[in-house]
Image (cartoon, rainbow, N blue to C red; front, side, top):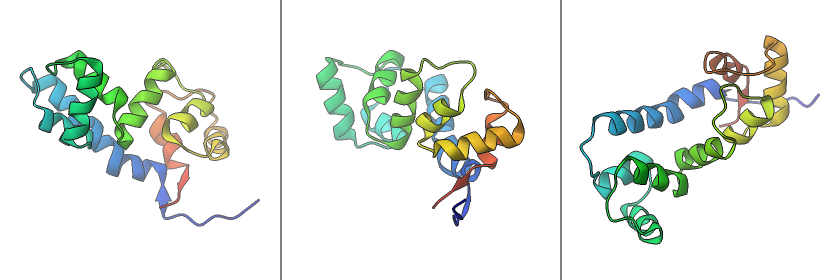
Length: 140
C-alpha cells in the first residue's frame, strides 16, 4: 500500500471551506429580499459579478429570484457551484454511495471506500458524512 502524507482530513477541509459557503447561501436564500443584487450573488457564490451577468444573459434572466439564483449556481465556475451541479446531477439522494461522494467532492474513490469500510457504513447520510469525511486523508 502506498503511503501518502496529508495535512488534514477532508472533514477539516469541508468545515473550513465548503460548509461556510453553504451557510452563506442558506442565509441569503432564507433572509434576503428579492430580487437579489448581482454583486451579492457573485460574492456568495464566489464568482465575479461579470460571470453572474453572463449567466443571466445566456438564460434570459432579468432579475434574480430564488429559481434564478439556483440556475446561476448550477452554471457558475466556483468550487461551491461545481459541488452543487454534481449534487443536482445525481438527483440529491437521501443517501450516498462511496462513488457518489467521490464524484461530488472530487475525492479518491479508494479513500472513500476505505473510510466507509472502516466505519461499516454502506450508504452515507447527512449524519454519517462527517464521520466518513473525518476518515479521508486530504492533501493540501
